[in-house]
Amino acid sequence: MAYPHFPNTQMVVKVNPTLKIWWRDIEKNRGLEASELLGGLTALISVESDRYLIKALLQFWDSERLVFKFKDFELTPTIEEIGGSLGLPYKEQEMIIPHKPTPRSFLKQMGMRHNPDLLCLKEGWISLEFLYARFGDEEGYENFSREFACSSAKWEKYRLNAFAVTLLGSLVFPTKRGKIHTSLSYVVRMLARGGKTIVPMILAEIVRELTKCTRGKRYFEGCNFLLQLWVVEHFYQRANMVDIIRGSMGNKIINHASRMKYFVSPVGTEDWFVYLRERSTTQIQWKYYWLKPRCAIIRGNELYFIELIGLNGVQPYAPLRVLRQFGQIQMIPLRSHMSHYGYDFGPEIP
Image (tube, rainbow, N blue to C red; front, top):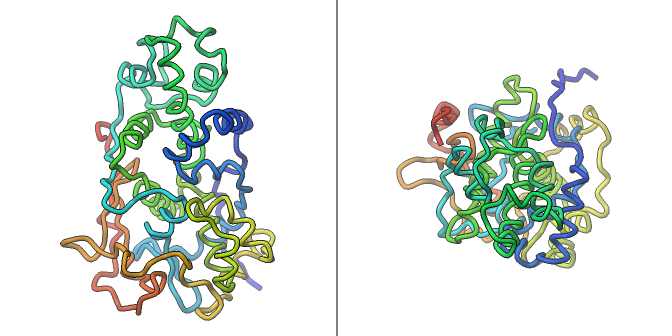
């Protein structure tokens, strides 16, 4: 059997041990606050990566129509599936428009003094190790008191935001070599204020990276953990009762392994490719049992697709092509090619 060429696409494979240690401390002391801020994103820390699945999946991505094209059907991750799985609000919420902070502004947002020696901030990134030493370690304030512009009491409030920035930068919007976007400090601030949703941003970066990696990019900077879980949820056909019994009212990520208990996973990129290629429309789970069809966001006010604001650019999104995922009758969308409507932010934007 002939197989296509599988590019050596890189992605997050293992969760940084320091992030796991930090989460255990947060979960014990401020778990409820973390869940309110990040929803099921914290459960990604326990997910085991299957990079072979993602590499095989890239072979099916249509970068013009922005959907996965399989044997006799199309699928794509939707706002409702991502938001519902994570237990995060997205209805009647504003999309977050990211802003790239100056080095001084980033440090101020973290309760710290300006430090001209942190050259990485000029390039728009910070390291996990830097954030953990100052905010994750219980003695962080004591050890680096000269770097802070706040009291120890206020420092305690900054700690959760620092963890959120680190988690988002490590697992949700990762970059090669583990550099964390400083623009995520603004994203976390907007989430904490309420009325804003991060769900479209997460989906935008997944779709953006699918297109870029099919065109030769070597590192997948979207949330491959979420994409992996989404694929398995759709390709493991089961009775709705299984999901109801092993589901969760909010965070569906934490119960994913329980729902997939009897799923026999292919092993390796080639096995995954064959498995995905051979599935037909009658062998998949079309609709998540908890998704309400009438509540689906399927188009914009003026366009037949939706423009999502991502962390790195604007990304078209075409749910009209996958109405069966909402339990609706599929229609032929009026526009087929949408990729040219997307664009990346320049160095001055955001």
